[in-house]
Image (cartoon, rainbow, N blue to C red; front, side, top):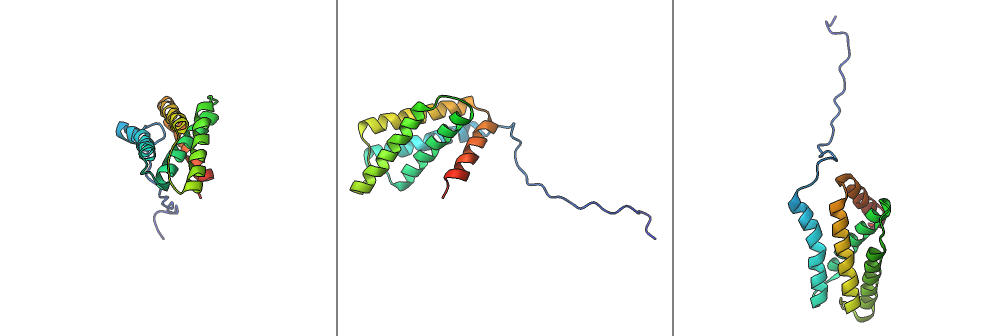
Amino acid sequence: MPSNKKPRKKRIIKPLVLPQTIRHSAEADTELQLAPHTELMKLRHGYGDEGSWHTIVCRINIGVIAAWQNNIDNTVIKKGLDAMINVRNRHEKSDKWGLSGDDLRDIGEALVQTDNLQLSLTRKQLNKAIEYVYKEAAY
């Protein structure tokens, strides 16, 4: 008869993730902010593509949802999203990716507002907005 009569506990493997209280690096923060601005400049100069459009729309969607979830005014960001819809509609008509002056201004303001919002939110709030956008808007 075995000396230990208690059954062994099953080993539970937990995924290794950072706790929500630890914020990602400053370099990652900057990269998250700069990528959409770079893609906007590509569209402005006429060599943007569908990937540029998706990058900017994803970033603006994150801003809209983050503002909505935290009860912050998001009218500026929504104007930027409407401008991105205009860009897509223009592409469908002319088969070229381009911006008007008003669209460029509205999208730029929306991206800046989203960047400021990102800096003011906690990691948990930002992750919640990003997860919502990826869950609901991804196709």
